Image (cartoon, rainbow, N blue to C red; front, top):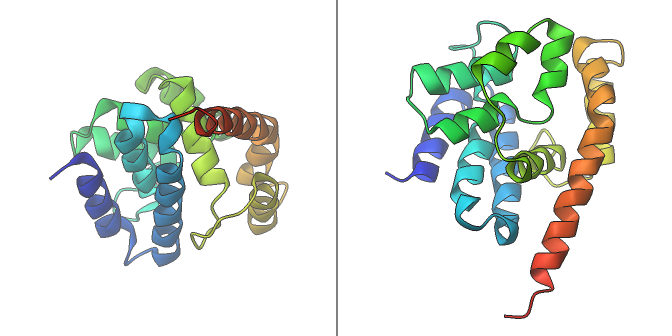
Length: 187
């Protein structure tokens, strides 16, 4: 079984029954990651695997800290022996260090999991932040608004996502520039 097939199977087993909406979102994030393949080269499968697994830490069977990037990355590393780069992407997806800081877990996240290449981090941010909770396509602005509305502006998640907004917009701009340049290249 290849990396992406394994990732889809694992994510489905962890999310589809207890959290069907989260599973739909994960499928949408993976679809968006696939659409970025022109700028990913040999890392396209790696990003798609991380995308479909990025929210596995929400699974009730493995949630321990309540911080899904950390719980998911630890599970993938410790229980599944997953590819180290996939684990790092899951650990740091969508500006997770800022949320970890809000939760008092930044030191743990930083010391346990190194950052992946910035281009891949950007691509995963964009994949997640342009996908609705039901797996549809959206804009970063609409996604950020939805998250603040769903959680509330004064909650941990609400505060974190508002702090992360400038980096999310910047990542989206970097990815869009790279995608435009890649698609403008003659064959």
